[in-house]
Length: 91
Image: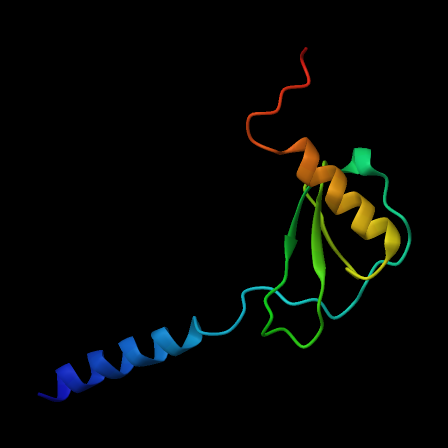
């Protein structure tokens, strides 16, 4: 009976660990990043203390940027258009 209680407590603790956001940004890159250097982006969770966009570069690095900056908005629009399903640039 004691063993089952121990297993149950491990399951509860493990479950609680996965509740929060996976990645939050606390430092931001405010310098313009060339669209040729970025392959993807992710919005951080609303549960993070600061709203942010996480950029993934062609080198596989991640950097945090502020979603309110005009160049970030332009970059997101560019990436969304580039990655739109059914679109082909080989015409």
